[in-house]
Image (spheres, one colour):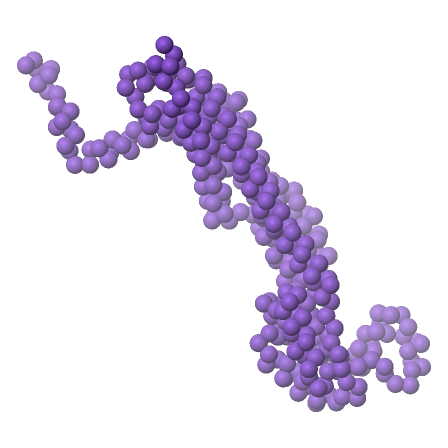
Length: 328
C-alpha cells in the first residue's frame, strides 16, 4: 500500500467515532443554511421584493395588535362609563348617608364610593347650567344627595354593572339608581368587533404570506430543475435536495419579520401624535408602547415558521415530481 493511502482512515473507522454522525448532521445543515443565503444574494432585487411583501403582510396585523394593546390603557378611563349614580331619599341626614357608604364599601364588587351632598350638587349645577341667579329664588333645594359608585374591573362590563345596580337599588336609603348601560354596551361591542376583525384580517394575511412563499420557492425549484435531475442521478436523496429550499423559506420569513418590525415602529411613530391627542380628549395620560421583546420574538418565530411552511408545501410537491427517468 502506498504512503498516500496508508495515511487515510477508512470511512468505517471515522463513522464509529462517538458523536461523529451527530456532528456531521449539524454541519451539513449549517452548510446548507449558509449556502441558501448565497442563493438569495444571487437575485437581490427579486429576493428583497419577496421579503418586502412578507414584511408588509405581517406589519398590518402587528400594527392593529399594538393599537388594541395601547387602547387597553384607555379602557381604565372608559370604565368610568360603568359608574353607578345612586340618588338617596329626600331629607336624609349625612350620618345616615355615611352608614350607607360604609355598607356599600363592604361589597366585593365595589371599588370606590363618592358622596355628593345636595348642597354640593346644587352648587355644581349653578356653575355648569348658567342659571345661578334664577336658582336663588327657589324655596328649597330640589336636588337629592348622591352616591357615585365605581365597580371593580370585573364588574365594569355591562352584565356585571347591571347586576351590581340591581343589588344597590335594594338599599332602603336609595330612591333609585342610574347607569348608562347603552353607552357601555356600545363601547364593549366596538372593542370586541375590532378584536375579531384583527384576528380575521391577521389570519388572511398570514395565509397570503404562505402562498407567496410557496410560489417563490416553486419558481426557484423550476429554475434549478436540471441541477436537481443531476443530483438525483448521482444518488442524492430527496431530503438532501429539499433542505436548501426549506432554509431559503426560513430566511425569507426571518428577514420579512425584521422588515415588519421596522414598519410597525415607523407606523407607531407616525400615529403617536394622533393617539396621544385622543388620550387627552379622554382625560388619560398615555405613551405609545411598541413591540416588547416577547412580542418581537413571537413575530420573528412566526414569520420564520410561515417561511418554512410555504417552502415545505412547495418542495413536497415539486421536488418529488422531478425524476431523471421522466425526461428520457
